[in-house]
Length: 175
Image 1 (cartoon, rainbow, N blue to C red):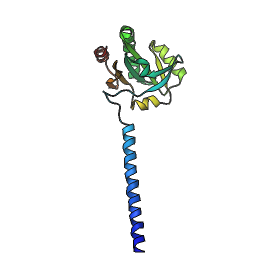
Image 2 (tube, one colour):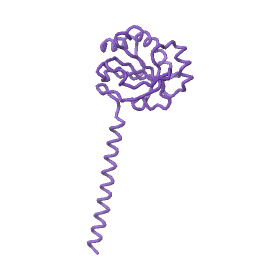
Image 3 (spheres, one colour):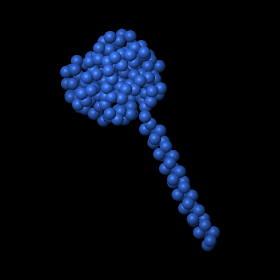
Image 4 (spheres, rainbow, N blue to C red):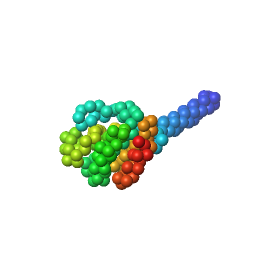
């Protein structure tokens, strides 16, 4: 009887410790999965629809190119203020290997089409209506911009807006 109690008590303690251990391990895995995307990392692989209906695979479709990912939304004035400079860079450096993708976060296609037309955007606009890509790319606020080099490594992560001069300097350093 004493042995049975000791075994039962030991089993409860062991089960409790095992449960605690598993919780700690699970929390560690979750933290690693949700870890911030850092400069020096490879960007997560995602596939999104563009405004013209094609599926764009990031970063796979852009190997050997300098890739700028600009997360934005129509209600973000800072996002829209940066876009004329990005349009200028797209026209100026596109033939040298710069690809700019405007990733709209959380808006319907018809709204995004109207905004893109009003702003005169000629570079590809991608749709992230359910914000899956934004979550994969650690986008907690917009604008957010990533610059990926020709080897597929994130070299710049811009939180908030950036000046035209800053963007140009970063782009030129990667071309």
